[in-house]
Each structure stands twice: as structure tokens, then as C-alpha cells.
Image 1 (cartoon, helix red, strand yellow):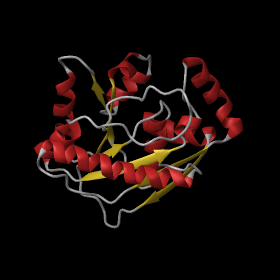
Image 2: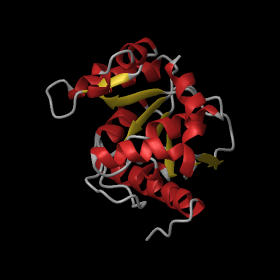
Image 3: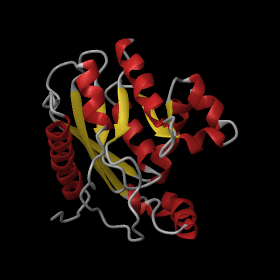
Image 4: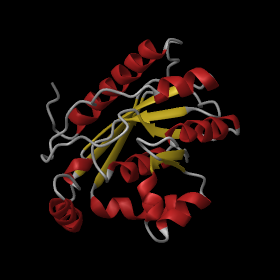
Amino acid sequence: MFSRAVIALTPLFGRLTVTSEIKLRLPAGSIFVANHDSLADPAVVMAALRRFELDPVVMATAGLWRVPLLGRALTREGHIPVHRRTTHAALALDAAAEALAGGRHVLLYGEGGLPRRRDAAATAPEPFRTGLARLAQTTGALVVPVGHAGARRIASGSAAKQLAGTLTAPVRRPHCHVHLGAPLRLPAETERGTTAARLAVTTAWRTAARAVGEHPR
């Protein structure tokens, strides 16, 4: 499976540490929401979740499905393409709701895209889109905030810098940390739910940033 390949390869690119505030077994069909600041962080987050025997369906940009072999692997494992800024974008939420109803966990990124930054520093999550809150309202699913830091040390900046960072990561061994925050129920109102989710992810991100030696503001 693609996820197993990711897990097997991730340790080659850095040192991954994980902490968690989850005390009880999560119910089937929970939503994981993470900050998103690097092309490398989906692999880092997936590898961290697998340490807890969690294998979520991932909502990811539809462009990945155009990559040879990768697209077929993503489809085979049930991951969900998000056609951002198109009339088909809402279909991803329908597919996510179906996956949750079937007992699968779902991993998504509340910011809906990568930040336009070229430095490798960790910064707080940008404003969230409302899709997460609407999905939680529709399904009643529990939400687990996920904060991570360090993935930008693997890949960030221009395309050339990202390639260079990825190629040198096995030598540099950057430290990446993922922190799972305490699960929560989002407020029913969309705006309040979106704000609560971002606050929870930001809190988890601060824990991760401190773990890799960053000083979050």
C-alpha cells in the first residue's frame, strides 16, 4: 500500500518524534485536522498516525492524482481528491462524509492549501476554511487536532530549494515532531466551529514547534 511505502521511507528523511493527549480509543469515523506548511508534511503526519495504528483517508489536492502511479495508489486506498477553486470542490466533503459513515478516519488540512512563504521556520496555522466545521456538523464526528513542525526543514521555498532540501534531508536528518491534541466536539455554528478548530490545531502546533527547538509566538 502507498501509506506503508510512505511510512517505510519517512525515517530516511529525518528524525520523527510523536506525542499525544488522546487517552481513550477513538470512535470509528473521527476527523483529524492538521496544520499544513510543507509538501513533506502529509508523509510526516501519516507516519506519526500509523504509530497509533491509525490509517486515515486523506483529503489532498487533486493534482497528486495526475502523478503516474501515485494517482492510482491514492485511488486504490480510498483517498479523496480536492478540486480546489472549482465547482467540484464540494464533492470532496461528500466523499469524506461517506468515508466517515463507513467507519474510516479522515485527515484534512483546515487551511486548504500551503502558505506562500520561502523560509523554513515554523509559523502558526493560517485562517481555516469552513469545510472542516461543515463536515463535522453534517456527520457529528469527533475532531482531533494535529500539530506538526519540522517538515519545512525537509521541503520549503522555491521548487529548486524543495528539491535540494529533499535530496539532502537523509544527510541532515531534520527533526520533525507531531503532536495529537485532545479530541473535541466543534460548536454547531460554522464560524465558531472553524475558530475552535484553528485554536486547537494552533495549540497542538505550539507543542510540536517547541519539541523541534522553535520558539512559537
